[in-house]
Length: 121
Image (tube, rainbow, N blue to C red):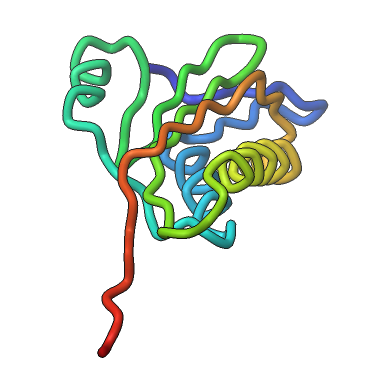
């Protein structure tokens, strides 16, 4: 999968897929209620067959026009899952568009696990 390129007045700007994935990861982790990201072992096959990009809970489908992002998150017990997922979508879209100038078509959020802190008696 090729890195995303953008032509400017002075030349070509190439943004590595790792950078886009890193922005998405950090944006997801900033959302209150997200404990971490979870890698889906089956989604790694998509990278093997060159159908996309997968790394540590982030998948990218990059076309000439836009980017589609998938993220698998671990949420904290007791939070509103729909609210957290919505905030993750918005935070990722905003961060990538502001930092790269690229258009984000969609952000899919999968809830991969639930984290419950151990309580002391």
